[in-house]
Image: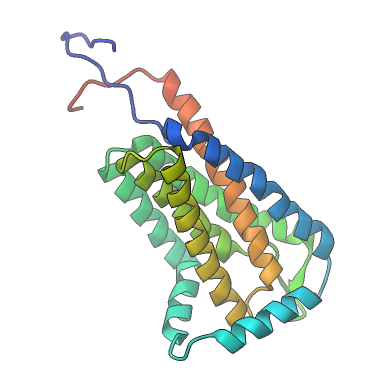
Amino acid sequence: MTQDDTGRPRMPARPALVPAIRRPAAGLGVLGLPALAVPAVVFGGDTGPSRLDTRIRTTVLEKAPAGSWDLIRGIDWLGEPIGRALLLIAVTLICWRAGRRALAATAVVGMVAVTVLATALKPVVGRRIHAGFLSYPSGHTAALTAAALIVAFLLADLLDLGPIAGTAVVLAVTLAAAGLTSWAQIILDAHYATDTVGGFGLALVVVPATAAVVGAIGRRLPARAPGR
């Protein structure tokens, strides 16, 4: 531990990813690549649902609980521009107030990058829904999955979890958020089921990579004194 000019010890900044979840986070990034790339290749240029998409939507509609419309609309709203902006602000402030500045920076950069990339990839893949709207990957699913990943990383840090428990928390929080968002998008017929897989994969690739870059930059910065 180094000292500042007054002789007080300087504390190293808290990393975006604590050591216990660095490898699991990297593993998620690796898993995210095929989740993003495979549907893009298989369904790129399509203008209608695949048999798998049709089968999944039929099943989801049949099993949707009565009275869930408000929840569905609420989840969908969080993926809209205003909802995403508020979600970004909320997640960033939570990380900042918890003293995890590197994770707060990861939230800003990662969530913005996910939105930009989801928008940029749509015309590249060229998949369409309702005869004209570009649909792959699902930006809604990508945005909410990215937010959930940040929150899960924060929980693993605050609770001082080991690799197994930390991985379990990250997976549980992320899968729950992605599953709920996918469910809402499928019921609303805003995206095909496989579009949401792509959005999920995009978040898995971008957020851990962003955390790794932010962490690398943070390690090059001087440590701060306590209380500053």
